[in-house]
Length: 287
Image 1 (cartoon, rainbow, N blue to C red):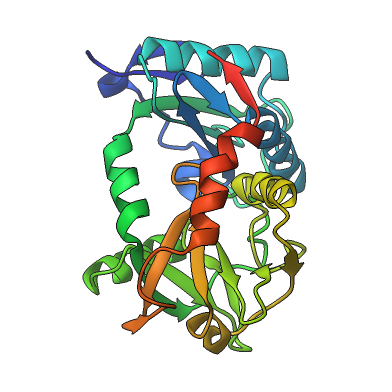
Image 2 (image 1 turned 135 degrees about the horizontal axis):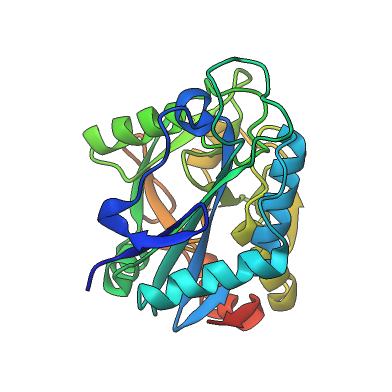
């Protein structure tokens, strides 16, 4: 069945979806996005994703394209029209279409909104959880405002491509001080030598992941103590466990980084426990 996209007020076949060549997202990466999981016909953590969307738009001074109620209706309709039971939807808002100029266009220019959805293979995700994944580390060369979920992802794409070429599935950014920031498309966690669950604070240098936030709720319920602090590449390599989190993967264990085995080389117990209880805590909204 052909996929359907929502583009600026119209539901259109995915193959016919178009945006203008002077859309500022295309020319300046002047836009933001969200990716949200659909699991068993339920949208996961939608409220937190839309809260973050509002923050990203505010930080870039882009107007909200429509009310939250209307946007939620569009999202549900796109997911329904694409018959997604397990998968994701992608939402992108740009400043809109205007004559190319670095300064913002007039307030009369309306933001552009695109929403797409697709199914994913749960078996592929399960296989990565069972075996764990490999990662590499790369220098963090991104812009300073990574707390905004901007569509300007070229450094992330280059890092993920390097990981692929080296036989890994994720690239982990390391800042100028030798400290871990985050993955190319994930937040990074470790179980340190004292048994604490550690992740970098989200006040600067990383995106405040929605899965990251919900995972903290899960850890609290399970009695897992969390320490929000910076940690180095060396500490990460010596950790008992390393795992990464994102909306579409939840909690992937990392068993090798830069060719070095992490822990005993197998997925750790903490990641498995958290993943097993995640959907008990996460918000779930019917399509």
